[in-house]
Amino acid sequence: MLSTIPSERSYRRSRLLLTVFGASLVLVAATGAALVAVVSNNVEQAAIAASVASDASIESALIATDVPAADLSMTGVTAGQVVQIQNQLRDLLVHAPGILHVKIFAPDGTILYSNRDGLRGRNLGPDEDLEQAFDTGKVSPSIVGADDPDAATTGLPAEDQLLEEYFPVREADGSVPAVFEIYRDATPILVTVAKTTREVIVVVLVAAIVLGLLLYFIFQAAQRRLTRQTRALLEASRSDALTGLLNHGTAVAGLADLLEKTRGGEGCTGVALIDIDNFRLVNDTHGHQAGDRALLEVARIMRAEFAETSILGRYGPDEFLVVAPPEHSAGLESAIDRLRDQIAELSLQFGASERLPVTVSAGICYAPADGDAATELLAIAAIVLGEAKASGGNGVRVADAGPAALGPAERSSFDVLAGLVLAVDTKDRYTKRHSEDVARYGLFLADRLGVDPELRKTIEIAGLLHDVGKIGIPDGILRKPGPLTVEEYAIVKQHVALGDSIVRDLPNVGLVRAAVRHHHERWDGDGYLDGLSGEEIPLIARILSVADAFSAMTTNRPYRKAMSIQEALHRLEDATGSQLDGRLVTAFIRGIETADNAPLPGDGRPLRRMWTPQTSVA
Image (cartoon, rainbow, N blue to C red; front, side):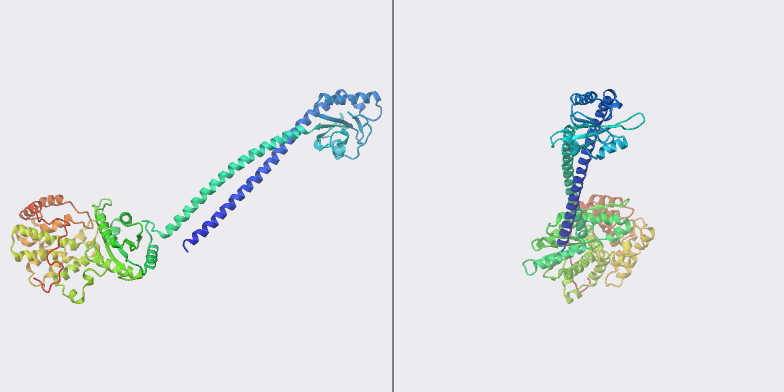
């Protein structure tokens, strides 16, 4: 139906353009015909006027010199005078080329004189042009055929065309005693008119052809532009205005169509929902333009990563939908991993903000293993996406994989430690990796210091739980992608006290409580919450302070991009004696720079028993 409607509209639009084009050509033709008629008539009138002016001079001279007013009568004129006047008229034909016949009429229509003998005294009957000449005293020329009754006296062939001219002879008192009639060969006039008409027709035809071609190309261009606009409008109705990917409705319809086409076939269809981590807070802190920029960057990388046969759409405000057909579904997970790696390399900066990281989480499911309907698959993908976001963000979850697939007995076997860490993960998607890193760095520093095994085990647990108090910090503050206000920072500082309250009832965690409460104390006494300084700060808290500082600087945070290892180590060194215990910093830096097993940011080495179900706390 979508393809039929644009086709019908295009047909109607083409037919309309053809109608307008045809009407334009008809108008051009009519205008050209009218122009030819007007020009021909004007040329003819101009030629006649020129002949009339010339003949009027001849008539005036003849009357003035050779035909006295007294001779303009049938009576009182001798035969010799008649012969003399008629000879003068014959001479006129000789000396004025083009004049074929001359007559002089009396007011009653009687012929007084003529270049032809035998016409004197004849009356040719009523003649409107002659009467008009006597009545108005005006020259009245017209072109007639030689077969005209009045022109029959010329004795010319019937096919000849003649210019008939009547020149009233005026007396001083204004009376008209006679009318001078001249018949001139109209052929030169008609030839001139015909030639001019042909030239005008040629000019009009050339102009019409040029105009027709111009109209053709203009209408062709208009048709192409309208076609492009129609396609653009159709595409706009299918695409997201910001990213250019398919919009929600079109992407879901594409998924449904693909499932219908591949139903019962081999292979599986992959469905992935991708969500930009911390997107709402970026919008709230830096404005919608910042959020739009993040969306555009993610969409750009998606286009480059996924096959052209895959369906890519903007599913929600900060979510994207990827549908991989059976021939590409096997590589969906690896493609999303590559996508995450490329996005992790992005860093956006807005105004005076730090370079902000961009990460995404993804939930994946497959048809028909996880469902065979679009709504069912999308619901499952949304659930596993929620798990990926709750597990710290920047992760991928596949349906029926991981903790969600564990049976009730296995899930119930998670110990209290895992439960607390999972609670923090659900609260703050960035805390999982940070907590693991702090534990790894803390264990590494403990090994460099040679602490006893019991303290080492406690450092591991304390590292995982050092930020457990963030459960009580409001999301808007905890994930704010920008500097905190004084009031917000005062709230954040309370997480150590809340963490101390949460872990105080766990068995065998006296040192853990000290680590949780005091890991933000400073060597110079300017830390929080108790303002301890130097050796007053428990060793376990000082160890975690070094690990926490290094992890915070080398991990992407919502409000800034991660630092390089060298820059982070340099800043640790700068904090010696003010924020951190110099002895511990020196041991940590030397170990990171020289030890073969030094834990580096992002190496992903899991802690022993970190997420393994246990029955008790060690």
